[in-house]
Amino acid sequence: MSRKPTSFRTELPLLIWLVIVWGALWRDFSPGNLLFGALIAVLVAKFFYLPPVELSGRFNILRAIPFALIFLVKVVAASFVVLYLAVVKGPKVRSAVVAVPLRSHSDLMVTATGHVISLIPGSLVVEVDRSTSTLYLHALNIYGEADIAKIRHETQNIEAGLIRIMGTREEVEALKSEPRAGLEGAVL
Image (cartoon, rainbow, N blue to C red; front, side, top):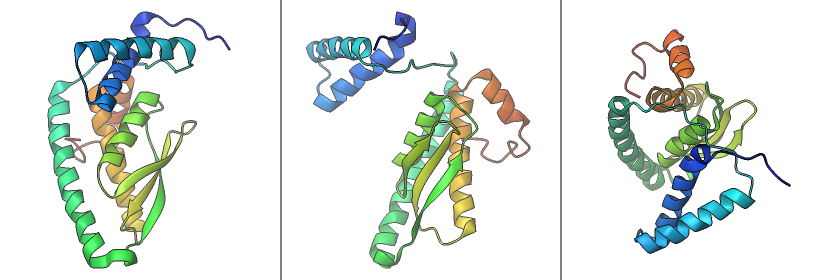
């Protein structure tokens, strides 16, 4: 099956990402290995259908730095919570799959949000519904509606932070117009 031609500029972020993944998988970022990875990336992009990565054209470094720092704090804190749950509660820990609707319908934003939330111990994306931009998360330590609301709120705050960093201008404006977008989650 043939696909419509995509400009090199549109595919460049995908190609760069594939080369980085190639280097990471081989744990070798030597020029020769990256050149071979670039060749493989071009072949993959040419012969397999991969949707183009649509970037917003903006990246706010002033939002990205605090986001990264808070993310690291969340990873460390969640690691200790998971350790506590494993040692103290063991098999008595309750978990649940929680549906979290997202604001953005951009594949990049949904994917980025899913990756960030999955990197924080205690939750993992098990399914993505692209048609509704809904993430289904397996989360630990869920005992009631308050815990479900908390995981939804945290995931939506992460998405809001990513929108502030690299979302489209329309997504940023929509975020600003939300009633709860004031002080809540201002850093993320």
